Image 1 (tube, rainbow over the protein chains, first blue to last red):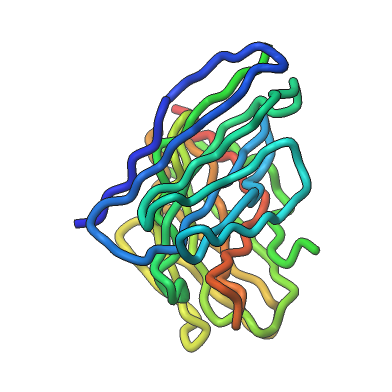
Image 2: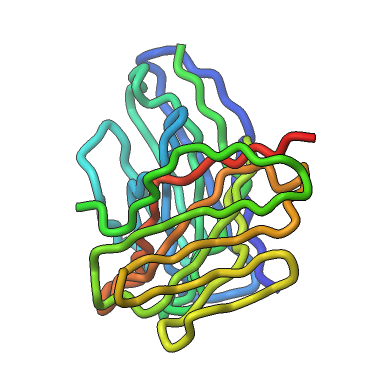
Length: 114
Length: 113
């Protein structure tokens, strides 16, 4: 069966510090991978998606970047965190043909920038 | 462009009563819809879905109704239980996309004793 792992679960970082969140998927190959953010009291905002190794698309301009060094590994990074980067970050994967299957989400990372 | 809309940010319902969550969409090309449930500090989990060829899909206490002419769907939870307290997201796959799901803003459901 397929599983998705996301870590760390919580993170408190000072403003200006770097960030690296990692997500890995097991039990499938060639997945679509996604990074979402849920700001406090708000909906799900798609940050990045990837349909293959090294292929990253950004949905919104921001202080963050993403990389996919391996087929089932997706990394969210920042060189210098801002206060506005605080939020709940979710990794997700889907089959290539997402229609009718939807996404499977990781357990999320609560990031607090202080 | 918010193509999937959940206009009620919150809903409070008594335990045992019916919860009705609404979702509207603007893209007439959407042909499949999903509902996700999310607890605090956890990722959303798939709850129930419906294809546009149907107008109703039922799974236990959860039923989703689709009205294509009105571009409206609703999720009914009967009877509501305390464990149903969560945020519920409506979503639709964007046709001919790379796999993009368009999510609504979510509705926070609180089930009171």
